[in-house]
Length: 195
Image 1 (cartoon, rainbow, N blue to C red):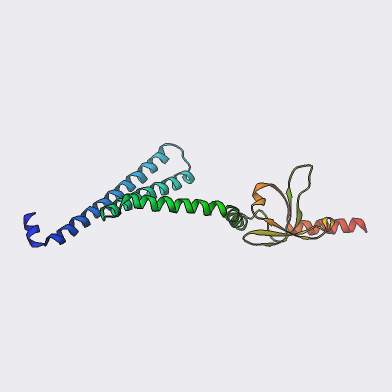
Image 2: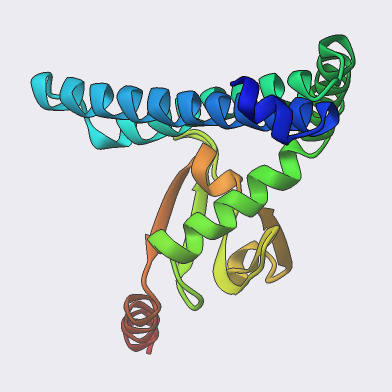
């Protein structure tokens, strides 16, 4: 050790020890993260836990461990823990307010993604949002689906107006759906009976 001290100047030695401490912190965090991941995998094998539950828990614990390691590294580099916690809590508070203010827009965006991927209805289908069993809701042909609204052309009996329904409404209420081809066949039958 003394030989190493004699070869390197004092300032280099301090930098060397700081680098070694940072490497040890990161290595310990990586090893801890791997142990936790392996433990969660064994827990999932031992008990019938769904993978949909284990994946977010594993990811959350990984972020917690690596975030803590980053805080330790920054503290070793001379950044005050009080300053870090103040900045982090301020960021979380602003993010929470922004998330709350944007909740309805984010909800409609998420529901649009679900409409596109799950496909509860398509353009050309006739859908009806059911408020209650005794109260009719909005009913119309789907003519457009965008990230915030689904545009319906009301049935002629209801006035034939364009109605923009927020996408989140399709997941908060019951929906009746008639496929486009089914509706056309039904209209042809009704027209034939009227003649």
